[in-house]
Length: 159
Image (cartoon, rainbow, N blue to C red):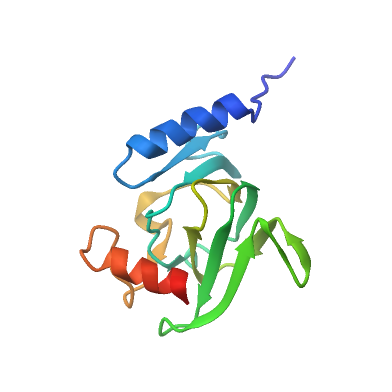
């Protein structure tokens, strides 16, 4: 019988504890076995204050899907100059009904920010993962460890 991995409350709590202990205030739990796998499937637990620098997956072109299993998160899309073009509040009722997730096309600038005490996402994106070309970070947004990152993140959340 093939091995299975269950997405349980215990697993989510374990990943959330790791996220709490992480300076980045987030943590992945991979279901794929290594960087060469295709597709990549993982839980991503995001806590308030985490900052994911806006980025895109253009070369090679990769789509990215997020499903919110718990909590509420904003996925924000940007144009080439950093202006916000769209905001989707996942995990919450909207004019379209309950928004569970989003599928982002290759080359679209985006970020995701936690709006609740914890956000649990199931993510899928094509593999393989290669650090050198996994994502292109936006030059118009502060780097993750930049002192301006927290203020920029708050501006995005307040927008």
